[in-house]
Image 1 (tube, rainbow, N blue to C red):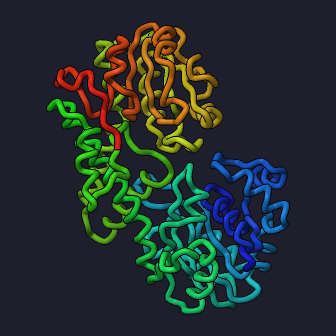
Image 2 (cartoon, one colour):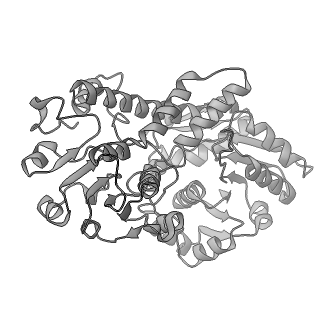
Image 3 (cartoon, rainbow, N blue to C red):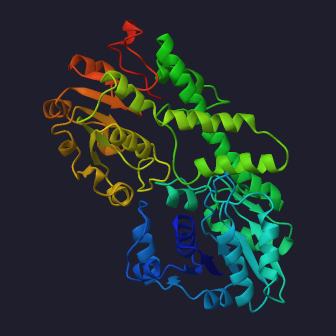
Length: 449
């Protein structure tokens, strides 16, 4: 099939590349000339494992190209995916200006009927607005499909090539058939993974899925905070409840809060949509509130340890991205932690395998950046583990201890064995477990499922 993807950001670039990998002819469109020039010269604007190689392979094979020429791309295509940003407004609503402008652009360029696919995460009712915007610019009939993405940053290629499910929302039989054929190569093991439904149900599905996952995270963080107070261990609690087949283990990790491009804005958007329909989504408001407070938990532990005065002290921060295997720092807990440290007059030395360039755009020269994790420790009064990169999971603790001014670790992701650290003389602060409250657990390694 001939496909145009409008928007060459995270979703658009991954989707377009994967469609090309399955044999389609794909052109990715973006208004950012610098980004397109870079892509045409083999420069991938985001970090995603496996994407670089797949892009270059499909460009070489002639199945994937990049352009700023929207009109030519639309005219040459049967299907046009809209994968532009939908940033949240101050009130939590999704900003649809880029989606609707893309739709009008499709209409202006259309040389016949087109299937327009909403790949961007958009609130319920957007397909109607897209259809109206596109048809206002053309005499041709437009069919709009909702096809939400369910990609995890750091595993997006696998998620797209081997999806758990593909949701297709359409009221048009021909469009359903076209979308089914398009996605069949990715679900050949089980065609039932393509789930057909009406447009509005598909639009709600994406928000509902992310809201549910965000709820699990905030719920476990609340459980973790209770565990610290009563002398329980949240890692053991997770094993106990996650073993229930109705619940399962994923997204039951306690930590220092969720971030990224999806959960924060999608939770806000569905709260806003509910409000527009006279419904107060109390549970999700609580989820958002819990997450906002959780991002300061590590900082609050640190302040308590140092007696509320950290002016002039230096702290080593391991991990800047909101999660491993990405350079995405949108709503990352590290931003809130580092800004809080700086506001109190502390100095910060930070490291991350992929996000240092992004961090420099956020913090500039306010903090020191280190390529090697151990270099952050020299002269530091404590270490803060914020993102659980594989590279950080098994450090040489003798080296860590020798290079820190004082052997103090604040673990925002519970990846270190507190029993071993206690034996080596560290003062260790995990999430959801307080050895000072329950001495019986002080030297026990946490059980990890």
